[in-house]
Length: 311
Image 1: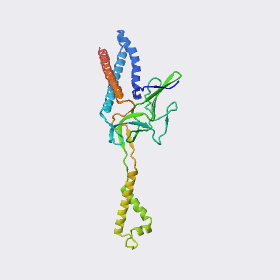
Image 2: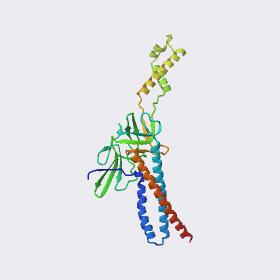
Image 3: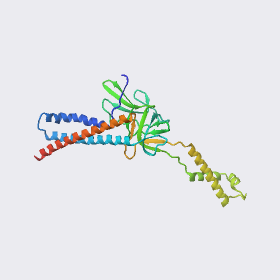
Image 4: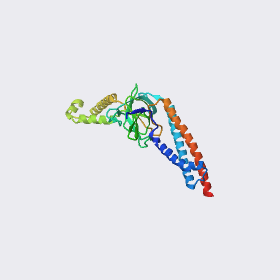
């Protein structure tokens, strides 16, 4: 069956929400049908209803917090150019590209890509966080390396295909996709040990005593006195500083954006900012509704359960 491009679904880390929903069908069949029929609930039915409602309330609170915190992070963080981005929490926007030296990834149908996440069947797979190989992002000012580990990824493409009775799908990011990345930005700094360079230069000169005397024995007495030794050290320092300047001039900083260590949102999205806001806001609404429904259900079943226990 030909591959079909459809819109991405929710991030796989919310797969446990499917588990809660599927279990809810069983709870409703066991408890809800009895309530609708006006039957007296057994102690086990009350306990099951209270436990599932409490889990729903906890899940609702998490969904609300997840959507709210990430939406606020997206709204409150201004976009930065890669070359002028400050160290810390930033939002970058650019075109994805393959990094040299990183193994090439191939999707299930053999198409090369930068990142993919497998989905089995019609439900999201909780273990499928996606590939972890880094890829690059570039804008008109520079480039940065993206480490997708622990990211909320809103991919540009989702492909589905049929194999027998099973439906498969993959979210993918290709080279050339335009992405927005929200995360912790760091740039490497050139490192040069000036003291070690001076010591190495002196050691190198002293390995050839004849050349050393010819260069620094000003009074030609066959030895290096204190004044000549001082001049030798000054020249070694000057030579080491010249090497440092050359090394800094050749150095190319490596820009990196990754998951923040303080737990703030790490988002890689091919969606427009407006679309991403709407998606995260939908998680907030879903969370509030689930929290209210779960709280009411837990209070109802809990009260009935306590009353039955004390009776």
